[in-house]
Image (tube, rainbow, N blue to C red; front, side, top):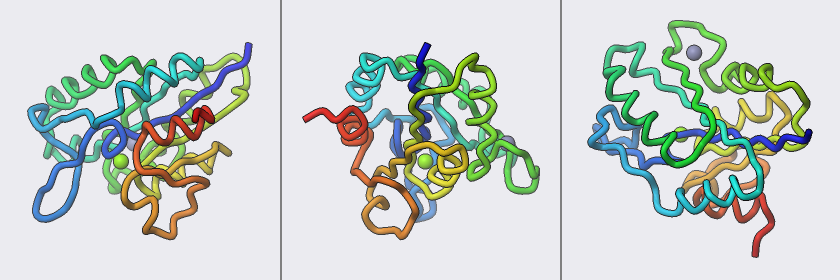
Amino acid sequence: MSQKVVFLDRDGVLNALVERDGKMVSPRLFKDFRILDGVNDAIAELRRQNFELVVVTNQPDISRGLMMQSELDLMTKAVFALGVHHVFICPHSDEDSCLCRKPKPGLLTQYLALLDCKPTELWMVGDREVDIAAGLAIGANTVLVGLGAFESNTRQHFGVSNLFEAVKFMTALK
Ligand SMILES: [Mg+2]
Ligand SMILES: [Zn+2]
């Protein structure tokens, strides 16, 4: 059986970043966790197109003691409620030297190892260079979303403004 898989970064792709100390960063509290416009429709369309939806997210504030696991669990529940099939989380920071923190592809390869057949299509959608690097490491098509998509010199295959646009592109909808 053929299997189409899309790996989705979480922060900046599914949910909005928050401002902290003048920077746009990941939310630490569930009360600050807001799903971006168009994400529900994008997920629904990917499901209609028979994609397996796998969220792969770095959450180093867990390792750093800056976010409670219970807050992250609430966010993960909200992500599952969108209709994604799997959520894989790297809770480590750089000092942990793990194999799963993007740009390393460990979260992605961990999932692929569970499949009993080779996927026919692989995609990675993220808003940072580390997401694109992880996707390229497994030979996936990559899409960079968000404002940075048009500004940076990152190596994405395709750049669009948000997940909904990414899905239109992936599924060649007009
Ligand atoms: Mg992100
Ligand atoms: Zn890790």
